[in-house]
Image 1 (cartoon, rainbow, N blue to C red):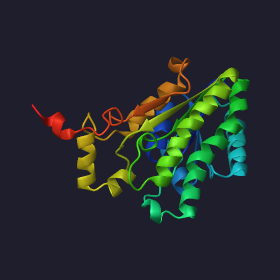
Image 2 (tube, rainbow, N blue to C red):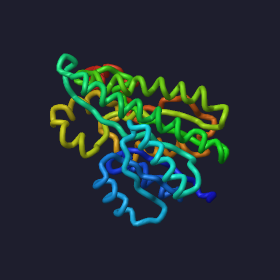
Image 3 (cartoon, rainbow, N blue to C red):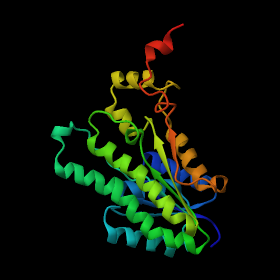
Length: 255
């Protein structure tokens, strides 16, 4: 019952699964959460450990979130960290984005972290506090085309992170945000053409996409005792993409 426990949403693949593996490597227990039950249970089975449990859940549904948190507490007895990674994206021009598109993206990407923190903060406080990491995006820091719903949801999540940090610090709960830049996920490999990848390489000072494991390292650091005096902050794990602004690749290549 003293072994630390994390809840990770969107844990069936990609960054969420990498975060799960990182916690397990540090001898934490993990409650894996995802709306896609079949993929989630397959990912859980692949880990072959008793230190992880899987719970299908739509994080935008308050009743399902309550049930999921209760199941995690029943399984492991405590919660020490929450990683709000579950998210969806609709890549359409602003004028073609329907209200249904807009509403669903905000429901998952913004309501989900709101609901999950509401349900877990008091649980974490019972064992001395804990940490929340919300997974934002560089799209929440820099506007871009085709991201009116996604980018707005992640920008709002950055402010929600500050609100949560400000109000929950008194009960020992720290809240931070990790904003990944372009990451070599399966989705990115499917939708980013060679031309898009070249554009990103030109705009990123480190000249490459990030790895899922590199995002997981940043998440784990913010959940660990090494970050116990850090709260309300945004950590951009992006190869310098945000810092470089427009980048001016031509100037960077100049002798």
